[in-house]
Length: 241
Image (cartoon, rainbow, N blue to C red; front, side, top):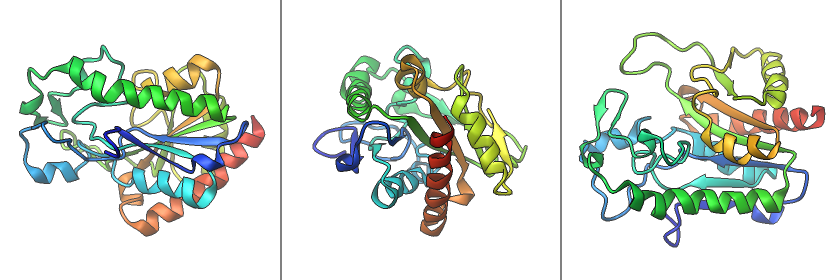
């Protein structure tokens, strides 16, 4: 966390009406002082704690491609910013078969007040200043879940709820790059789309909620490649809206 805030913002000087902005809800595995999750430290390096590679892609969007980014600095196991406040998983007690004992009986209201609300209030201000033509949400997913042997073939996927305007263009353009592109896979945006529902769909702003398979962006080279590829594709999506 920076100055006690559950987010950091990069490229704020590049905010301009009608441009592109980025948000990364699960970019950090940081656990603030005073919170004990009660899990093995090694698990904090896995997908249950952080969207591996997402921070690197979002940061490169801002620093190299002129797409300002709002990036979480607290682990999803502390407070999941891509969940509604009344969602039981906003402070998860289990994830992919792992019990999170420190969250059982946790003071959820305190976590919301300390992390969730400041994060979303700041992003709402970010959006208000930017008045973006397109919001890009960056996440990553595992090649397979611990609780399932089923492989996930998509290198990248687009999630959406009701508004699929931008996603339709992105799916086509990424497919033209020779990629296997998921359409509301491996998760459906109709069930898991909280941040985009709140800050994009509720205000009629087109968005691309992007899931990148983690083996594609584990390395800095992969993060650079995908940031460049997606910056180009998202720019073309914005032109077609």
